[in-house]
Length: 347
Image (cartoon, rainbow, N blue to C red; front, top):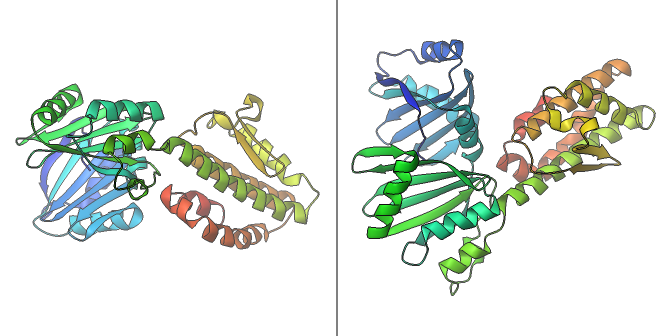
Protein backbone atom coordinates (compact mmCIF):
# COMPACT_ATOMS: atom_id res chain seq x y z
CA UNK A 1 0.00 0.00 0.00
CA UNK A 2 1.25 3.49 -0.87
CA UNK A 3 0.36 6.37 1.42
CA UNK A 4 -0.57 9.79 -0.01
CA UNK A 5 1.42 12.59 1.59
CA UNK A 6 0.49 16.26 1.50
CA UNK A 7 3.90 17.44 2.66
CA UNK A 8 7.16 16.20 4.19
CA UNK A 9 7.82 17.13 7.82
CA UNK A 10 11.07 15.17 8.29
CA UNK A 11 12.98 13.26 5.62
CA UNK A 12 15.63 10.55 5.96
CA UNK A 13 16.19 10.79 9.72
CA UNK A 14 18.66 8.11 10.80
CA UNK A 15 17.40 5.60 13.35
CA UNK A 16 20.95 5.53 14.71
CA UNK A 17 20.71 9.15 15.87
CA UNK A 18 16.98 9.71 16.39
CA UNK A 19 15.07 9.10 19.62
CA UNK A 20 11.81 7.66 18.32
CA UNK A 21 10.09 8.25 21.65
CA UNK A 22 11.08 11.94 21.63
CA UNK A 23 10.02 12.26 17.98
CA UNK A 24 6.56 10.86 18.73
CA UNK A 25 6.33 13.11 21.79
CA UNK A 26 7.07 16.16 19.65
CA UNK A 27 4.53 15.10 17.02
CA UNK A 28 1.97 14.52 19.75
CA UNK A 29 2.56 17.98 21.21
CA UNK A 30 2.09 19.49 17.74
CA UNK A 31 -1.08 17.40 17.17
CA UNK A 32 0.42 15.98 14.00
CA UNK A 33 -1.89 14.31 11.48
CA UNK A 34 -0.22 12.08 8.91
CA UNK A 35 2.22 9.18 8.74
CA UNK A 36 5.50 8.18 10.37
CA UNK A 37 7.46 5.76 8.18
CA UNK A 38 10.30 3.50 9.38
CA UNK A 39 12.37 1.83 6.67
CA UNK A 40 14.95 -0.97 6.80
CA UNK A 41 16.01 -3.32 4.01
CA UNK A 42 13.04 -5.62 3.45
CA UNK A 43 10.95 -3.74 6.02
CA UNK A 44 8.44 -0.89 5.75
CA UNK A 45 6.49 0.18 8.85
CA UNK A 46 4.03 3.08 9.10
CA UNK A 47 2.25 4.68 12.05
CA UNK A 48 -0.99 6.53 11.34
CA UNK A 49 -1.38 9.66 13.47
CA UNK A 50 -4.44 11.83 13.97
CA UNK A 51 -4.28 14.98 16.09
CA UNK A 52 -1.06 13.70 17.67
CA UNK A 53 -2.40 10.25 18.56
CA UNK A 54 -1.31 6.96 16.98
CA UNK A 55 -4.54 5.42 15.65
CA UNK A 56 -3.20 2.48 13.64
CA UNK A 57 -0.09 0.92 12.16
CA UNK A 58 0.84 -1.02 9.05
CA UNK A 59 3.89 -3.19 8.45
CA UNK A 60 5.13 -4.97 5.34
CA UNK A 61 8.16 -7.23 5.52
CA UNK A 62 9.49 -10.39 3.93
CA UNK A 63 7.22 -12.71 5.95
CA UNK A 64 4.04 -10.75 5.19
CA UNK A 65 1.96 -7.81 6.35
CA UNK A 66 0.49 -6.82 9.70
CA UNK A 67 -1.67 -4.07 11.22
CA UNK A 68 -2.88 -2.79 14.57
CA UNK A 69 -1.14 -2.93 17.94
CA UNK A 70 1.28 -5.70 17.00
CA UNK A 71 2.40 -3.68 13.98
CA UNK A 72 2.77 -0.53 16.11
CA UNK A 73 5.09 -2.38 18.51
CA UNK A 74 7.08 -3.67 15.54
CA UNK A 75 7.51 -0.15 14.16
CA UNK A 76 8.74 1.14 17.53
CA UNK A 77 11.20 -1.75 17.87
CA UNK A 78 12.61 -1.31 14.37
CA UNK A 79 12.91 2.45 14.93
CA UNK A 80 15.39 1.62 17.70
CA UNK A 81 17.55 -0.51 15.38
CA UNK A 82 20.56 1.11 13.73
CA UNK A 83 20.95 1.92 10.04
CA UNK A 84 17.29 2.55 9.33
CA UNK A 85 15.48 5.63 8.05
CA UNK A 86 12.54 7.58 9.46
CA UNK A 87 10.30 9.83 7.36
CA UNK A 88 7.43 11.94 8.68
CA UNK A 89 4.66 13.14 6.37
CA UNK A 90 1.63 15.34 6.92
CA UNK A 91 -1.70 14.36 5.41
CA UNK A 92 -5.33 15.37 5.64
CA UNK A 93 -7.47 14.00 8.51
CA UNK A 94 -9.89 12.47 5.99
CA UNK A 95 -7.09 10.60 4.22
CA UNK A 96 -5.62 9.27 7.45
CA UNK A 97 -9.05 8.10 8.56
CA UNK A 98 -9.73 6.40 5.23
CA UNK A 99 -6.41 4.55 5.22
CA UNK A 100 -6.92 3.61 8.87
CA UNK A 101 -10.17 1.94 7.81
CA UNK A 102 -8.53 0.22 4.83
CA UNK A 103 -5.50 -1.39 6.49
CA UNK A 104 -7.37 -4.70 6.88
CA UNK A 105 -9.17 -4.58 3.55
CA UNK A 106 -10.16 -7.85 1.91
CA UNK A 107 -9.74 -8.62 -1.79
CA UNK A 108 -12.83 -8.42 -3.97
CA UNK A 109 -10.93 -9.42 -7.10
CA UNK A 110 -7.31 -10.04 -7.97
CA UNK A 111 -5.30 -9.57 -11.14
CA UNK A 112 -7.86 -8.38 -13.64
CA UNK A 113 -5.90 -7.71 -16.83
CA UNK A 114 -6.12 -4.61 -18.97
CA UNK A 115 -6.51 -6.86 -22.01
CA UNK A 116 -10.00 -7.79 -20.83
CA UNK A 117 -10.95 -5.16 -18.25
CA UNK A 118 -11.36 -1.44 -18.83
CA UNK A 119 -10.06 0.58 -15.89
CA UNK A 120 -12.62 3.29 -16.68
CA UNK A 121 -15.47 0.76 -16.49
CA UNK A 122 -14.06 -0.75 -13.31
CA UNK A 123 -13.97 2.65 -11.58
CA UNK A 124 -17.51 3.40 -12.81
CA UNK A 125 -18.77 0.08 -11.44
CA UNK A 126 -17.20 0.69 -8.03
CA UNK A 127 -18.68 4.19 -7.99
CA UNK A 128 -22.15 2.75 -8.62
CA UNK A 129 -21.61 0.24 -5.79
CA UNK A 130 -20.51 3.00 -3.40
CA UNK A 131 -17.39 1.00 -2.55
CA UNK A 132 -14.95 2.18 0.09
CA UNK A 133 -11.58 0.66 -0.70
CA UNK A 134 -8.90 0.90 -3.33
CA UNK A 135 -7.71 -0.37 -6.70
CA UNK A 136 -4.11 -1.52 -6.87
CA UNK A 137 -2.73 -1.04 -10.39
CA UNK A 138 0.46 -2.64 -11.69
CA UNK A 139 1.74 -1.40 -15.03
CA UNK A 140 4.48 -2.73 -17.28
CA UNK A 141 7.59 -3.97 -15.51
CA UNK A 142 6.67 -2.90 -12.00
CA UNK A 143 5.26 0.62 -11.88
CA UNK A 144 2.49 0.73 -9.28
CA UNK A 145 -0.49 2.95 -8.55
CA UNK A 146 -3.33 3.11 -6.04
CA UNK A 147 -6.76 4.63 -6.57
CA UNK A 148 -8.45 5.20 -3.21
CA UNK A 149 -12.25 5.37 -3.08
CA UNK A 150 -14.66 6.49 -0.39
CA UNK A 151 -18.32 5.80 -0.97
CA UNK A 152 -17.44 5.00 -4.58
CA UNK A 153 -15.74 8.32 -5.30
CA UNK A 154 -11.99 8.46 -6.04
CA UNK A 155 -10.55 10.66 -3.29
CA UNK A 156 -6.83 10.22 -3.95
CA UNK A 157 -4.56 8.62 -6.52
CA UNK A 158 -0.88 7.76 -6.10
CA UNK A 159 1.37 6.51 -8.90
CA UNK A 160 5.06 5.59 -8.66
CA UNK A 161 6.68 5.30 -12.09
CA UNK A 162 10.15 5.95 -13.50
CA UNK A 163 11.52 6.95 -10.10
CA UNK A 164 8.86 9.63 -9.58
CA UNK A 165 5.76 9.58 -7.37
CA UNK A 166 2.69 11.44 -8.63
CA UNK A 167 -0.52 12.20 -6.77
CA UNK A 168 -3.96 13.49 -7.65
CA UNK A 169 -5.05 14.15 -11.27
CA UNK A 170 -1.47 13.85 -12.55
CA UNK A 171 -1.26 10.35 -11.08
CA UNK A 172 -4.56 9.32 -12.66
CA UNK A 173 -3.45 10.69 -16.04
CA UNK A 174 -0.19 8.76 -15.75
CA UNK A 175 -1.95 5.50 -14.84
CA UNK A 176 -4.47 5.81 -17.68
CA UNK A 177 -1.74 6.69 -20.21
CA UNK A 178 0.55 3.82 -19.23
CA UNK A 179 -2.26 1.25 -18.97
CA UNK A 180 -3.28 2.17 -22.52
CA UNK A 181 0.21 1.50 -23.86
CA UNK A 182 1.45 -1.32 -21.60
CA UNK A 183 0.06 -4.44 -19.98
CA UNK A 184 -1.60 -3.73 -16.66
CA UNK A 185 -3.34 -5.64 -13.89
CA UNK A 186 -5.92 -4.42 -11.40
CA UNK A 187 -6.78 -5.80 -7.95
CA UNK A 188 -9.74 -4.47 -5.99
CA UNK A 189 -9.83 -4.32 -2.19
CA UNK A 190 -12.72 -3.22 -0.01
CA UNK A 191 -13.16 -2.29 3.62
CA UNK A 192 -14.58 -5.45 5.14
CA UNK A 193 -14.99 -6.99 1.71
CA UNK A 194 -14.98 -10.69 0.85
CA UNK A 195 -12.82 -12.52 -1.65
CA UNK A 196 -15.14 -13.18 -4.57
CA UNK A 197 -12.41 -14.43 -6.89
CA UNK A 198 -12.97 -18.00 -5.69
CA UNK A 199 -16.70 -17.64 -6.35
CA UNK A 200 -16.26 -16.84 -10.03
CA UNK A 201 -16.13 -19.87 -12.30
CA UNK A 202 -13.09 -20.46 -14.45
CA UNK A 203 -15.17 -19.81 -17.55
CA UNK A 204 -16.43 -16.44 -16.40
CA UNK A 205 -14.82 -13.43 -18.03
CA UNK A 206 -13.12 -10.80 -15.83
CA UNK A 207 -15.67 -8.24 -17.05
CA UNK A 208 -18.50 -10.51 -15.87
CA UNK A 209 -16.78 -10.91 -12.51
CA UNK A 210 -16.55 -7.14 -12.09
CA UNK A 211 -20.26 -6.78 -12.87
CA UNK A 212 -21.05 -9.52 -10.32
CA UNK A 213 -19.19 -7.90 -7.43
CA UNK A 214 -21.40 -7.22 -4.38
CA UNK A 215 -21.82 -3.90 -2.63
CA UNK A 216 -19.17 -4.03 0.12
CA UNK A 217 -20.65 -1.01 1.89
CA UNK A 218 -23.99 -2.77 2.37
CA UNK A 219 -22.32 -5.94 3.64
CA UNK A 220 -20.32 -3.97 6.20
CA UNK A 221 -23.42 -2.11 7.35
CA UNK A 222 -25.44 -5.25 8.02
CA UNK A 223 -22.63 -7.07 9.84
CA UNK A 224 -21.81 -4.12 12.10
CA UNK A 225 -25.48 -3.51 12.94
CA UNK A 226 -25.99 -7.20 13.75
CA UNK A 227 -22.98 -7.14 16.08
CA UNK A 228 -24.13 -4.08 18.03
CA UNK A 229 -27.71 -5.31 18.15
CA UNK A 230 -26.49 -8.49 19.85
CA UNK A 231 -24.32 -6.47 22.26
CA UNK A 232 -27.13 -4.11 23.28
CA UNK A 233 -29.68 -6.91 23.66
CA UNK A 234 -27.27 -8.91 25.83
CA UNK A 235 -26.48 -5.98 28.12
CA UNK A 236 -30.17 -5.07 28.33
CA UNK A 237 -31.01 -8.60 29.47
CA UNK A 238 -28.34 -8.46 32.19
CA UNK A 239 -29.49 -5.07 33.49
CA UNK A 240 -33.22 -5.76 33.36
CA UNK A 241 -32.61 -9.04 35.16
CA UNK A 242 -31.28 -7.03 38.12
CA UNK A 243 -33.83 -4.22 38.03
CA UNK A 244 -37.24 -3.28 36.69
CA UNK A 245 -37.81 -4.07 33.00
CA UNK A 246 -37.00 -1.07 30.82
CA UNK A 247 -34.33 0.28 33.17
CA UNK A 248 -31.51 -0.27 30.67
CA UNK A 249 -33.37 1.37 27.80
CA UNK A 250 -34.16 4.44 29.93
CA UNK A 251 -30.53 4.91 30.97
CA UNK A 252 -29.28 4.24 27.45
CA UNK A 253 -31.57 6.87 25.92
CA UNK A 254 -30.49 9.41 28.54
CA UNK A 255 -26.87 8.80 27.57
CA UNK A 256 -27.72 9.12 23.86
CA UNK A 257 -29.19 12.56 24.52
CA UNK A 258 -26.14 13.58 26.56
CA UNK A 259 -23.79 12.38 23.80
CA UNK A 260 -25.81 13.93 20.94
CA UNK A 261 -23.41 16.87 20.58
CA UNK A 262 -20.54 14.50 19.86
CA UNK A 263 -22.56 11.91 17.96
CA UNK A 264 -25.62 13.67 16.47
CA UNK A 265 -26.63 10.57 14.49
CA UNK A 266 -27.46 8.80 17.79
CA UNK A 267 -29.75 11.56 19.03
CA UNK A 268 -33.11 9.87 19.86
CA UNK A 269 -34.96 12.98 18.70
CA UNK A 270 -33.34 12.86 15.26
CA UNK A 271 -35.00 9.48 14.56
CA UNK A 272 -31.91 8.31 12.64
CA UNK A 273 -30.91 5.66 15.19
CA UNK A 274 -33.34 3.62 17.26
CA UNK A 275 -32.93 0.69 19.61
CA UNK A 276 -36.04 -1.00 20.98
CA UNK A 277 -37.22 -4.53 21.76
CA UNK A 278 -33.77 -5.93 21.08
CA UNK A 279 -33.51 -4.48 17.56
CA UNK A 280 -31.48 -1.66 16.00
CA UNK A 281 -32.88 0.52 13.23
CA UNK A 282 -30.57 2.96 11.46
CA UNK A 283 -31.32 5.01 8.36
CA UNK A 284 -28.57 5.57 5.83
CA UNK A 285 -24.89 4.63 5.57
CA UNK A 286 -23.04 4.03 8.83
CA UNK A 287 -20.82 6.96 9.90
CA UNK A 288 -17.13 6.12 10.25
CA UNK A 289 -17.36 6.56 14.04
CA UNK A 290 -20.57 4.56 14.50
CA UNK A 291 -18.94 1.77 16.53
CA UNK A 292 -16.93 4.18 18.68
CA UNK A 293 -20.12 6.12 19.36
CA UNK A 294 -22.04 3.05 20.52
CA UNK A 295 -19.08 1.86 22.56
CA UNK A 296 -18.83 5.21 24.34
CA UNK A 297 -22.57 5.38 24.98
CA UNK A 298 -22.74 1.83 26.27
CA UNK A 299 -19.76 2.40 28.57
CA UNK A 300 -21.46 5.51 29.99
CA UNK A 301 -24.73 3.59 30.42
CA UNK A 302 -23.13 0.73 32.34
CA UNK A 303 -21.26 3.13 34.64
CA UNK A 304 -24.46 5.13 35.20
CA UNK A 305 -26.52 2.03 35.98
CA UNK A 306 -23.87 0.54 38.29
CA UNK A 307 -24.11 3.73 40.38
CA UNK A 308 -27.91 4.02 40.25
CA UNK A 309 -28.53 0.37 41.12
CA UNK A 310 -25.65 0.23 43.60
CA UNK A 311 -24.39 -2.87 41.81
CA UNK A 312 -20.61 -2.95 41.89
CA UNK A 313 -20.79 -6.31 40.16
CA UNK A 314 -22.61 -5.01 37.07
CA UNK A 315 -19.54 -4.67 34.88
CA UNK A 316 -18.38 -8.17 35.83
CA UNK A 317 -21.81 -9.57 34.95
CA UNK A 318 -21.79 -7.77 31.60
CA UNK A 319 -18.28 -9.00 30.89
CA UNK A 320 -19.24 -12.58 31.62
CA UNK A 321 -22.31 -12.34 29.39
CA UNK A 322 -20.36 -10.87 26.47
CA UNK A 323 -17.55 -13.42 26.48
CA UNK A 324 -19.55 -15.88 24.38
CA UNK A 325 -20.70 -13.05 22.12
CA UNK A 326 -17.08 -12.07 21.48
CA UNK A 327 -16.34 -15.61 20.30
CA UNK A 328 -19.46 -15.77 18.13
CA UNK A 329 -18.72 -12.46 16.42
CA UNK A 330 -14.92 -12.90 16.31
CA UNK A 331 -14.63 -12.61 12.48
CA UNK A 332 -16.64 -9.37 12.45
CA UNK A 333 -14.75 -7.95 15.45
CA UNK A 334 -11.46 -8.67 13.70
CA UNK A 335 -12.57 -7.50 10.25
CA UNK A 336 -13.87 -4.12 11.41
CA UNK A 337 -11.41 -3.48 14.27
CA UNK A 338 -14.11 -3.55 16.96
CA UNK A 339 -11.98 -5.00 19.74
CA UNK A 340 -11.17 -1.64 21.34
CA UNK A 341 -14.86 -0.64 21.38
CA UNK A 342 -15.87 -3.98 22.90
CA UNK A 343 -13.15 -3.87 25.56
CA UNK A 344 -14.05 -0.28 26.45
CA UNK A 345 -17.01 -1.38 28.55
CA UNK A 346 -15.99 -4.88 29.63
CA UNK A 347 -12.32 -4.40 30.54
